[in-house]
Image 1 (cartoon, rainbow, N blue to C red):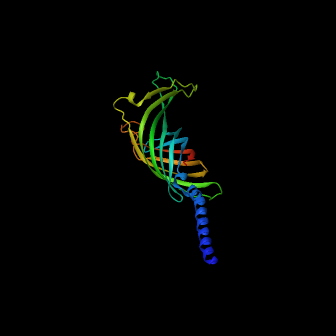
Image 2 (image 1 turned 180 degrees about the vertical axis):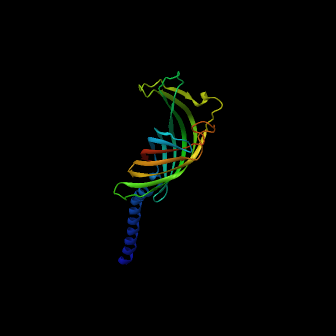
Image 3 (image 1 turned 90 degrees about the horizontal axis):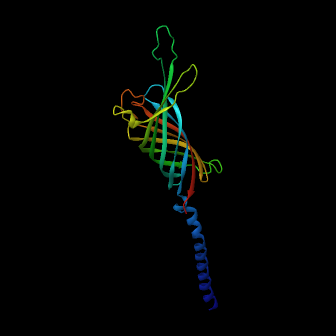
Length: 243
């Protein structure tokens, strides 16, 4: 009789103990593998250098980008990364001209540098692949995807310099709207972004290349006519995880 009572009591005690241990472990499992703990939001920014294809010789100009992002896990090692960025792209051209001179008089040439600067708000939608623990605490990553952009501002500056004395004239800056109705620049942009870098915790560094698929200028005669911009940037990420 005594053994018939002890056996159910021992079985009940084992069930209660197992249930209590499971309840204690459950918060830890949710903390380690819950999707909300892996969502990241942060800021990114850094210098960029712009090039233009489809036009004559241009000089690359250094500007920058700044914005925010979210990083949402889709599967192990794969994330969706929507961004909102403000990026300035600029390029310049240099021309040498000779002003009219009197007969038998040698005139000094004039060198004019003309720079076009465009500021865009961009919305890339990227896929990010991470490879955790590949180099200890450093995780390599690759990212890529399309983007859409809207032009916020546009301006041109020109500055003349005499090579003889090297004295530059005052710089003249004009917005694109001041150039007249014969010059037109696109208000929208679209293209793709590819890049790669490393992350460590919530800090990351990425080399990213942004390629526009739309021409900047629609005006024949403009040095940006039919030109498509590309920018190579070094972006620094600082993120925080949501809990």
